Amino acid sequence: MSQSNSPRPLPGPLLGCIADDFTGATDLANMLVKSGMRTVQTIGVPPSAAPLQADAIVVALKSRTITAADAIAQSLGALAWLREQGCRQFFFKYCSTFDSTDAGNIGPVAEALLDALGDQPGFSIACPAFPENGRTVYRGHLFVGDALLNESGMQNHPLTPMRDANLVRVLQRQTRGKVGLIRYDTIAAGPAAVHDAIGQLRADGVRLAIADALSDRDLHVLGEACADLPLVTGGSGIALGLPANFRRAGLLAERTDAAQLPRIEGYAAVLAGSASQATNAQVAAWRGETTNSDSNTNSAADARPSFRIDPLAVARGEAVVEQALAFARSHLPEPVLIYATATPDEVRSVQQALGVTEAGQLVEATLAAIARGLREMGVRKFVVAGGETSGAVVQALEVNSLQIGAQIDPGVPATATIDAEPLGLALKSGNFGAVDFFAKALRQLEGGSQ
Image (cartoon, rainbow, N blue to C red; front, side, top):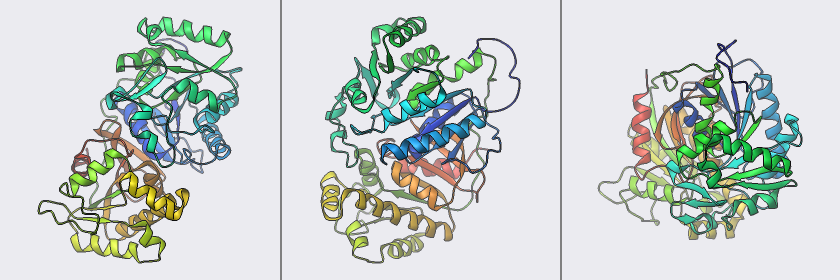
């Protein structure tokens, strides 16, 4: 990326992003909008190469937990489409907790993207840090708050249990090429020092390097040092430092309207499929902090309406979707919560009965069917908790692309559909959001931004 003050020659996207799940995509898009980039998120690779009017495009895939071969194929398809759009730099976004297994998919996808971009032998950083949400990296070790990744609760994740906080070690197990480390003392010395370190790592045959980061300042330093890299990989935090590179090159104007969304009319509902600690707390807050698991409806006087999905009942063939929709209909126009969120022990019990993959797919399919039914009732504003759940819901609602609006909580923006029936969506990663996130998200979707 040349550093010049020449005006941007033609409108069009500058940064092309590939995200491995839907909530991660909106998390990244939120970061770019906050930095003044008009951002559009597509749900999968669009069938048409018609140009989009945006500074950044984020292609949301559902590739985090599929086979590495399928994840590579989907990611390369997204890269090819983004190159057709004219993007100048590319970003591969994954979770700030580095969700993966020893087989992938972070390492295999990153290497495949480097190969496809032709920057041989190719180099990129890997930095999942998101300090605003408590994710930091020091000496290559990932912390969630004050706990190492493998002591944060992520070691119990049902699909991608993270039992090693040393990301150099984790990434090396996934890759063919050599993995290195850009240490914090180098980053503290500034962009020039990081740029020099990248040159040395390249000379040493390193293709991917974990980058330490403890603060947003570190992310800005890393972003500036990566201005000339064809590919950057990491969590959404690293995107903080990328828009300024385009401004320094005279390609991106200062904007104050990047987060504007239209007002959406209609009812509202919350759908939760994540089993994360954060989502469990958010469900409990909505339910008035009750934990009565024996009843679909709660009994606390101050609780808001909620209905719990029992995967075992679904597996037995009970009419759970119809029951949930009848419950919602009885409470409209008041917003309702329909959830399959459960404790780790409850999740393990269901997985033992149904199988890990089967249990997840059953919950996703059930909530997707409920989302379709809610739309038929006039629900036009959806708050969705969980990356896999969000992917299933947006596909069920036939959403193809989203305009990204203002932030609700760190990493989670409000969004509105572009090319479908007008819908307002807040798609939340399971681990994100304050305890009162559901209520805050509904207030922001109700208000819109004109």
